Amino acid sequence: MEQTTVFNPIDLGAGLTLKNRFVLTPLDMQLSRENGQVTQRDLAFHRSRSRDVGLDIIGSAYVDLAGNTALHSVAVDTDETIPGLIQLAQTIHQNQTKAVLQLVHAGRATNKGATQGQTIIGPSSIAAPFAGFPVPETLSDRAISKVMNHFIDAAHRAEKAGFDGVELHGANSFLLQQFVSPASNDRTDKYGGTLVRRLRFPVELVTRLTALIKSFHHDFALGYRLSPEELIADGMSLADTLALAKVLDDCGITYLSLSLRNYAQTSATMPTIQTEIVTLFKQVVHCPIMVAGGIKTSENVVDAGLRSALVGVGSALIKDPNWLKKVRNELNVD
Ligand SMILES: Cc1cc2nc3c(=O)[nH]c(=O)nc-3n(C[C@H](O)[C@H](O)[C@H](O)COP(=O)(O)O)c2cc1C
Image (cartoon, rainbow, N blue to C red; front, side, top):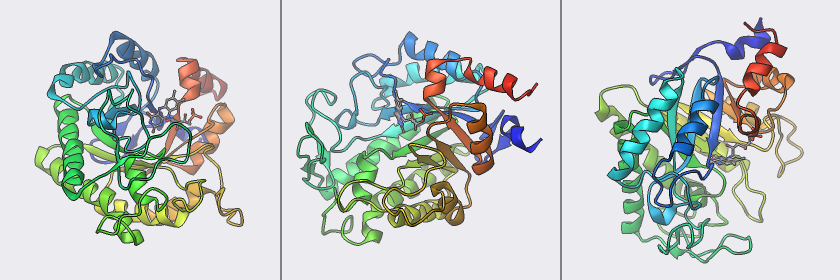
């Protein structure tokens, strides 16, 4: 039955053969210790929430303390984090569920409480247009390559910890998005100005990660999550992110994840375009796409499963670890 194929296994390549097409979306539940070490509460959350999904993505693991998004997020910034991350990956694997670690650098979208006093940095010295965000220090060329190294080291640690892959957090206004957006990037060097230059940071990073993954000599997935457009003046446009998605796909990412308010939404900045955002991205990439946002009922599940390869669920599974079982019963799936 086509409507319930979302419960069937799927092979995404790069070692990601999933028992079904459901994904626990990346969720920063802030259950870790103040130094980012994994706790029993992290393990309990993922033990119960990964049980029925094919893939569990751990949300917002910071690659450097200066890029932490919130206190008590999980860390992957030092080798000392590896033992806790091993436990987390093993806990998820015990459910025959694949485990991916989402890597984040907050850039300007954080505060000195979260970074524990570390200097806040960004592509340019432009503060986020919301109350309470500081003016970041502009990254020098050297500092840019240091930040990239933090991502590379973090991916290496995720691999050592037994994760099946990493996902770059290029959404929700964090550092990668700040490079792409003209509202946060007014650099005049090779990382700013034209669209090609604004895309350079994420594209270079993905290229370096792809090379790192080759050196592992075993399967390891690389996902990328993006927000399709910014709702601020002169913000990143849908055309910008469609171009980014195409380049990332050409670079060989395993999957693309769209961070949406609603899985079936159309553009908020270009209301004349009535085509759903997920359809626009399907037209430019070959890799599987994950949608998320507002999937709360059996109808939503079927509907989202017809639109994209991966169906991401956050809030419904936070509220009720048995939610997917109930959906299965409602749809009469064995
Ligand atoms: C508590 C909470 C924490 C979240 N943390 C992250 C995160 O770390 N990384 C991320 O990409 N999205 C994060 N999100 C967004 C979710 O992954 C998801 O896209 C969003 O909640 C919409 O899906 P839903 O309607 O099923 O909740 C978070 C959402 C919630 C509610």
